[in-house]
Image 1 (tube, helix red, strand yellow):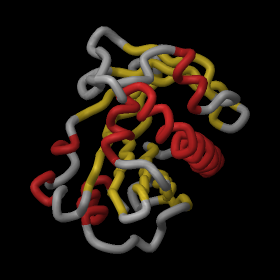
Image 2 (spheres, rainbow, N blue to C red):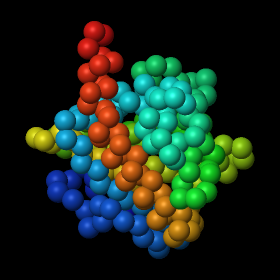
Image 3 (cartoon, rainbow, N blue to C red):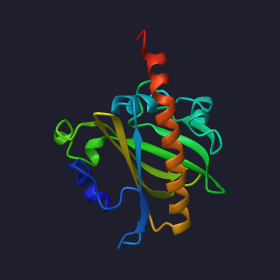
Image 4 (cartoon, rainbow, N blue to C red):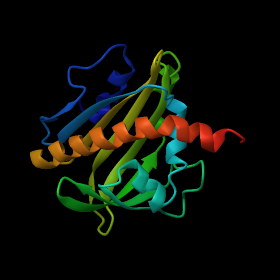
Length: 195
């Protein structure tokens, strides 16, 4: 799926590739990961990105791969769109230092169809190197609510990426989003109960 075809995620059912990676005709690598999250709702995913404000919280998400998680001056608790997440993390055996700048879902989707498609969150962004002005690609974590929780359909587009990087990114995403699905329901209740 090309980035400009992201609205296909709004259609019922599933796409031919929900977990895997492939090279697109334009040379980009496309990575997909489907994570089912019982007991979660899309609003919890949206809340998470406005909550994970420091390295300690970032490490709980993936204790092995996540090394540093900071934000630029545009982030504040509860608000991450327009801000950049400044991270150091392992992807495979390599430590990468990334700047993930979060954008409005309307930059990628026809948001007028979100309610019908039961979209609980759409976390969208550009990914670049932290220490150089080099763009690496785009990401979308598309979350739709179901009768048994929610499901996250993560998508990455890596500009002319290597297959090994795509494979390692797929594995990293499987692990971190699986971890998030486990820790989030109780954490969300604990942190929002009296607010």
